[in-house]
Image 1: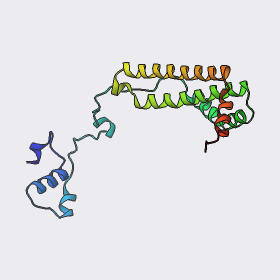
Image 2: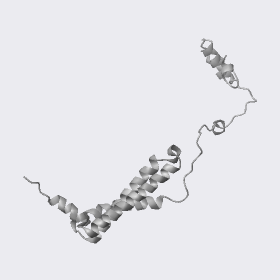
Image 3: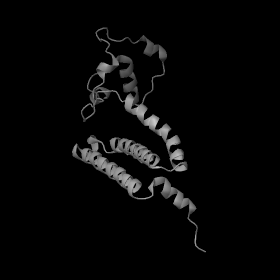
Image 4: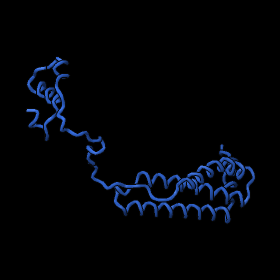
Length: 172
C-alpha cells in the first residue's frame, strides 16, 4: 500500500517501516532492520540535484553596481545632521538654513526611497506602480526642497521659524 502512494518504491528499511505503519504493526527489532541491505544499483545523488525548484516567479538577481557608496553617503549625512541642525539653529543664517534644508530633504528622500523600494515591489504591484511611486517620491522631495528654499529666501528661514515657535508665549 505504501508503494502505491509513492511514485517510486522506497529503499528496504524505509519500505519495511512504511509497511509496518500502514498495516498497524510496529517492527521493533533493530537486528531485522540492520540485516536489510540497500540495492547496490541505487546511485547516490546530491541533495541539491534532487530538490526541484518550486517557485513560480522568475529568479531576480541584484542589479549591478556597488551600493556601498550610497550606503556610506547616507550614514555620513545622518552623522552630519547631528551637527548641522544644532549649529544651524544656534547661529541662524541663510547658509545654515540652506544647509539644513538640503540635508533634511536628502535624509527624508533616501529614507522614503528605501520604504518605497522595500514595500512597493514589482513582484506585487507590477512594473508600473513602483515606477510611479518612485516618480511621486521625486516630485514630493523636489517640492519640499523648493518650498524650504522659498521659505528661507523670502521669509524668516528655518532657524528663525524654530526660534519664533520657541519664544511664543500663550495668551492668558
